[in-house]
Length: 287
Image 1 (cartoon, rainbow, N blue to C red):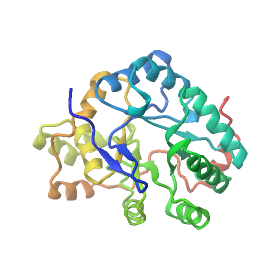
Image 2 (cartoon, one colour; image 1 turned 135 degrees about the vertical axis):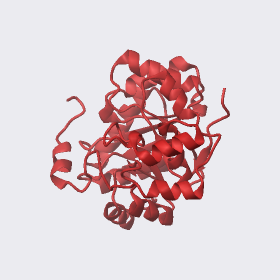
Image 3 (cartoon, rainbow, N blue to C red; image 1 turned 90 degrees about the vertical axis):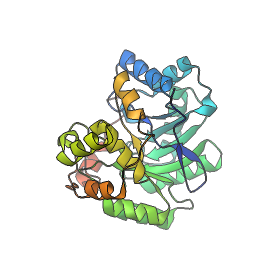
Image 4 (cartoon, rainbow, N blue to C red; image 1 turned 45 degrees about the vertical axis):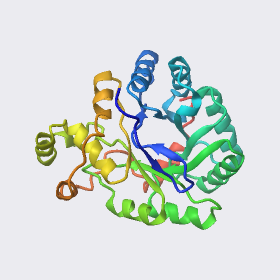
């Protein structure tokens, strides 16, 4: 067994494992269970889900099956865009707890900066102050969303989870988060299979140099930027491979090479697309 996955410390001193398992689009019970149990077997303790993933209940069951004490896990979920009011958000949170078979979350995020996110944040602050959430944050927030939120907030977001990969490095947002003391967390850290980032010549050269796979080079790059990475996989060999990144670092020169391949190429939805965000508020969790 490898050594324990190291952590980054949030502004409130809560520690978050630097590497987690994402379960986006994994709705098949067998695949989900195998994925979570394989991750646990290989030392992962950080699991990231969301209400809209339709698999919180399966994650909860898999974690109970694993036999790992709840106190050793770092469990994240996200409130979906159909929750617009304070009351909606509290109700969504309670549903998430029931599905995950737990009485608290380690991290709860506002999934997108859609209608009502200021009210949602007020609810997250209340739940945090009640001790039902150990850390609160946002996902897919741009700088303007964060600035508007922080004008109203009593508590600054502790994490912003955003699409980040070598072809979409989020440099301006990353620098802003560092200045604000908000932890940058990457979803789709390997590029989601879009844009052929794993085949990039620079990444291939670094894989050869360090005797690692392209995926391992990319994940190490995230961590060397002080970014939490949440790769998704349903294959045990890849889950294990993704975890084997703690025995090396990229040199400063190689980090510069990685910076040079940024294409500012978004692969997922755009959080500045107000029409898309408006549509998602009508998308209920039952769909």
